[in-house]
Structure formats: structure tokens, C-alpha cells
Amino acid sequence: MKRVLPWLALLLAAPLLAAEPLSLEEARRIAETRAPQIEALRAQEMAAREMAVAAGQLPDPVLKLGLSNVPTDGEMAWSLTQESMTMRQIGVMQEFTRGDKRQARADKALREAELAHVSQRQSLADTRRDTTLAWLDLAYQGSMQALLESQIAELHLQQQAADAAFRAGRGEQADVFANQLAIARSQDQLAQMKRDILMARSRLARWIGEDAERPLAPPPELKSQLQVHPALAESAEQHPLLASQQALVALAEADARMARENRTPDIAVELMYGQRGPGFSNLVSVNLSMPLPWDRASRQDREHGARLAQLDQARAQQADMQRAYRAELRGNLAVLDNARERLQRYDQQLLPLAQQQVEAALAAYRAGSGSLTRVLEARRMALDTRMEHQRVALEAARAWAQLNFLNPQEASVSAAHGVQP
Picture (cartoon, rainbow, N blue to C red):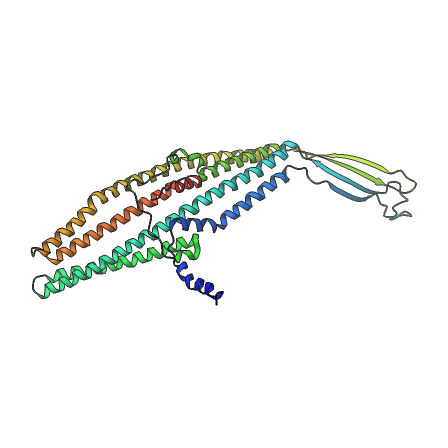
């Protein structure tokens, strides 16, 4: 019995553990451990580094076996020993690829490895950012759903008050219809919000799987001054996307170097031993061979020119990407600054004024100088203000995530310092 009780307790506690709220930090950690694209890029990097070693070696020697000058008619037909020119041959041929060309091939493989390594950082940054955005969308839309449901409940109360006032002759039928229309619109808005929540949950499930079905922990508390890592604006060259483009430029340079080296042919050396009949001397032959670039202007030079054009293309794309990145960075910073300003206004002015309006309407109603409809209207306006506050908070949190998860290193520093929205 003593052995069974711990297992029974574990089984009973399993549903509680499964229902534990999912925090933003845990969601990011799960996403990082379930990112097969990172493993694929790591394998690609390893393969490229292995190829770099192989590309720097000479080609394998070629073993050659043959028969030469075998007679096909007469008394010596098909004899391998009677004809003096008949030989059984064995030889080896080695192509001596120039060292510069082998080094160019090895450098290209190394550039491919560096590209795969940088792509791992890009994939990690994308995983962290997209997981954060999906979690924030789901969390804040869940908060707005709760507020909207509260608003619908307030509208139903207001509908009861409007019906009672109309039956008592103190209200108009238009107020009843207007309130019914407001309820119908709010319910339609709630249906759209539920759809958005399902879509946000599916985006989160893309990164963390079944854990996306768990209830979410409350969103991190928004501070009046959302922080961005101070070196962010100065880290453009470290951005994984820009670093990937720089690696593509380096790869294009390696291709251009290979094309330049291919303009000069390589030499192959062949050593051949020929065995003749018993009455004849055996022979040794040495041959040299090399391609003849008789039309280099139309072949090798054209290939070299194409690689140089591709290099120009990669450099132009790099410059354009740097410009686009800085523009996106400035745009996200502008969005974050605007959201900070609006949040401060909501916290200091709009939310307190909405609450004061509710309190004033309640005081007037209790004193007999106000109507219940006025109280419900004030509450509805207060809920609208709180929902808009949540929308601005989500906008600020999304801008924060876009900025702080541009770079895995920057994201790690931000998390280590507790910079949260």
C-alpha cells in the first residue's frame, strides 16, 4: 500500500499539473526546444564544414587497366604474346588540381557553413519573436473577451431597465430598440473576437504544439516606460537577417573566385606500365594531359562575368536590406513611443475619468436625481475605455516584441535583465 500511494497521488495530480497556466517565458522555452528547423540548419552547417575539408583535397587517383594492339586476324589472331606491339597495361592517373583552386572550393564550403550558422540565429530569433507575438495576441485578446462579455452583461441589465421604463411610461421605445441593437452588435463583435482567439491559439500551437491549449498566465504587467535594449539601434550589423545577407555576399565572392580559378586548366599525369610477350621488352609510358580552353572568352570568361554579376546583385540586396531594416526599426520605435504616450494618457486621464463618471452617475442615482440608464451608460463607457486600453497595451507589447527579439543575443540580454512588457 505504501508503494501504491505515491503513484496514486501522482495520477491524481496529473490533471492539475497539465492545467498549470502557461507563462510567456515558458512558451518561448518550449518553442526553442521544439524547433526542428534549427536542427536542420545545424546539420546543414556540419555538412558544409565536412565538405570544406573534402574540397581542399586532390582528386582520387584513377586506376587504368587495358589491352593494346591485339591482332584480330591471321596466324596471331587474338594472341596476347606473339605480336610485339600487344601489351597488357596497368597504370594510374592523377589530376593535380592547383592549390588555389582547391582553396577556393574549400572557402566556398566554409561560406556555406557560415551561412547555415547565421541562419540558425535567424531561425531562433524568428521562433522567439513569433512565439511571443502569438502568446501576447492570445493573452490580450482573452482579456478583451472578458471585458466584452462584461459589457454584454451590462447591456442586458440596461435592456431590463429600458424595458421597465418603457412599460412605466418613463422611456421611449426607440431606447429599447437602440439597446437591443447594441447587444446584437456586441455579440457579433464577441463572435469575431472568439474567431481571432482561435487563430491566435493556432499560431501559438505552430510553435509549442499541444501546450497552446493550456490556460495562459496573466500577461506581464505593462510599465509606463517600456524598455528596449539600449544597444539595439547600434546592432544593425548583428541582426541575423543582415548577417545572413552578408554571408550570401561572402558566398557570392567565393563563387566568383572559383570561376576565376576555373579559367586556368589543371594538369593530369598518367603513368602506364605495359607488359608484352616473352620475347619482347616491357614498356613504361608517362603522359601529361590538360584541357585546352580554346574559346575561353565565350565560356570561362562568361562564367566569371556571371558570378561577378551575381556578386553585384548580392551586394545591392544587402544595401537594400540594411535600409529596410533601419526603416523598420525606426517604425517600430515610433509605434512603441506612441503606445507609451497613449498608455500614460489612459492611466493618468481616461481610466480615472471613466471611473469618476461611473461614481458620479451612481451618486446621482442614489440621491434620486439620476437615472439607472445613465449609470449603465457610464459603466458601458468605462468598459469601452478599458477595452481600448487593452488594445493599446497589445500594440505596445507587439512593438516591444518586434524590437527586443530582433536578435537572439539581444533577446537573451533583455530577458536576463527582466525587461518585460
